[in-house]
Image (cartoon, rainbow, N blue to C red; front, side, top):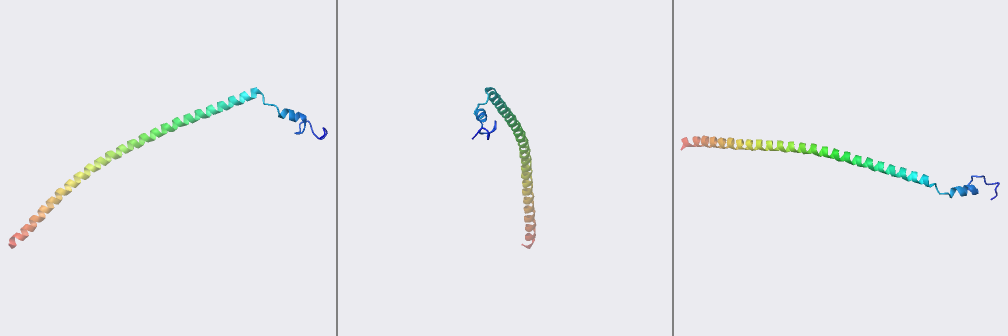
Length: 113
């Protein structure tokens, strides 16, 4: 290609080729790596803070569930005791009913003998 067909900064010009092969300056590279590291550390710090917040939220939820479970267990014990008392009362009333019905049956059968 001739010099007339290529402009100064076109891909076929020698200046373009010379500048495209240059390495970025070390200062740019250092700034890039520092910024990259800073972003990474900031991200890690945010992740750690989020992990702490999630852990605290889980502990609060766990405590609430523990307290709810404890109250359910206490209520269950109260209901169990009440059921036992009702069962005992039911047995006593059933015994009285049987005793009364056997006495009534015995009284009805006795005069016929």
